[in-house]
Length: 483
Image 1: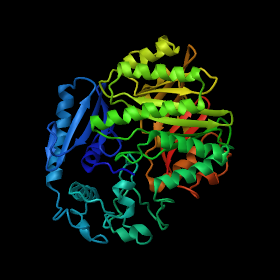
Image 2: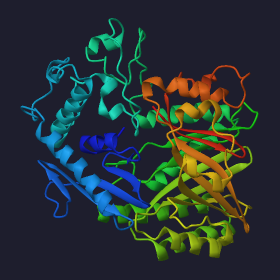
Image 3: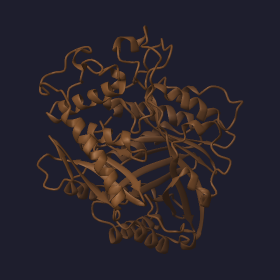
Image 4: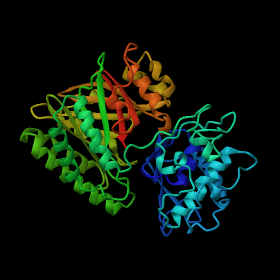
């Protein structure tokens, strides 16, 4: 997994609406403006923040208000002070085994200790080190955390048994729980590629899909993209859908997200490669009619978006066949509205259904299947309280409410001149040591009589780490990485 840069982790902890994209970028919305804050090399000429070897830059979709600038200024001054307070004596040396390198708590303050750990780890990474950081407990290894951290938990006392007792700092830890005497949840596979294949076999069987077809689709997507070795590449994200009232998955889907890099030259190269990749897959699975729809969508993207546009490619499979999916990630200030207007005009969408007042779509997707009309999908950021115009989930989230982060993505689908809001996606913030509790609630949410989480999702063959949950008109979908 990619490690979020500790300077960005520091800002994310203090900016409630911020979310991480990969290891080097934060995205947030302030006063209607989308802001990306990302790390740049120490010798980069453009940076709005610099402290030691840490330099940050940003992109913004609009003009920031003076109030917003002042809020960011306070946070950045706080970050600069924290960076200056780091006590990494020799960041080029190996970290000591056990907990010796961690120093003692500042007046018993676990949050201060956690911040010191992050600063120390930052120092070692910026010095060019890429070791396993043996001094950091496995449960706190920054590379093992989900993109969004759950709230900090302080226990009544430090555990005296179980793995947390070996850390000695677990009183302030979001992976620990009172009375925790069991072992930490392990990774089933240390290699993400091996985990993907293991998950593919299990999920294909659960969805009653021939494993040969699933493996063929997986291999084609891997080979066509060809960018898995790029620094910043992400593992495939899997998803399974449970239809309303059903306990059997009715489809399997996996997506290759575009690598998260900041170099414009590399982003342009990846963009060209992914355009070629999706055409390769279309030639294999689709007729000339659907291939023409894909070409039209790609033309709309080229005419309205920069050459650095991020493209993600997915495959959805059920017993009726395959569906090729491509998602564009418009950049802040990239005029996503022009892209949406062009795609709807040329692919037969319903312009009158676009939500008003206009706000940029954060994702513009296209789904294609042989013999079917194209489906244009628009993803809009919404706070939970502002979803009323979508008509989605008026009764709320039910038992999933405790997992609600307060925002999500409302998805509108345009097919053959018709449009409707089809689902609500929200990020899952559960810590990886506690993801089973979320799975249990998600599994039982639509049917209180359901049995326990099925074996194919219980972590016996692979560890499913939830990333998103989706509640839609056709059922519930769980998104996750496999490890």
